[in-house]
Image (cartoon, rainbow, N blue to C red; front, side, top):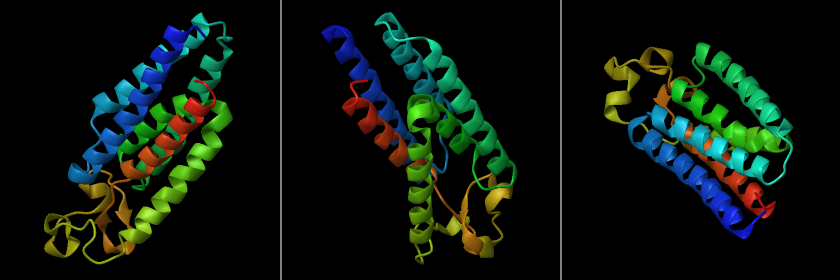
Amino acid sequence: MLPALHILDQGFIIAFATLALLAALSDWSRFIIPNWISLGVAGLWALHALLLVVQGHSPDFILWSVGVAFVVFLAGFGMFATGLLGGGDVKLMAAAALWAGPQFVLPFIVIVTVSGALLGLAFLIPGLGNRPEDDPADGAPAGPAAGGIVTAGRLGRKMPYGLAIAVGSVAVTVHLLSAGG
């Protein structure tokens, strides 16, 4: 890859991680992952893919990456339908799966799953992530009735799963940067 294009591509990869971290911050503070973040992640991936094709990579990886992202989206949609994930989580995870591609999607999913499990365990600690307005004892809805937000066990605490997705996205970023884009 030409040095200038390589630097530009590294900028796209770092911008992807930055958007994932912004999603985590938004999910932590407001339990919302804005659509523009997921669209930004997908758009940056399109620019990354274009740079790779311009540099001589076979465009086949584009179809494989989109296929992987579609499978991740379908699995996420199933989890959304059962109240295990919020809609923003599903969209962000599918967009991040574009970056993981077929060669890194399994480690990405494992990292997100383990990070989510650790986050869920942490949220079992009384007072962590449970705001008074989120307390089901006060009559506030939890889980799917509250907009499809992940809850930590039977306690009904909202859980910002965007944090776990951001951890997986940073792992993808490290993988891409170490592999040269």
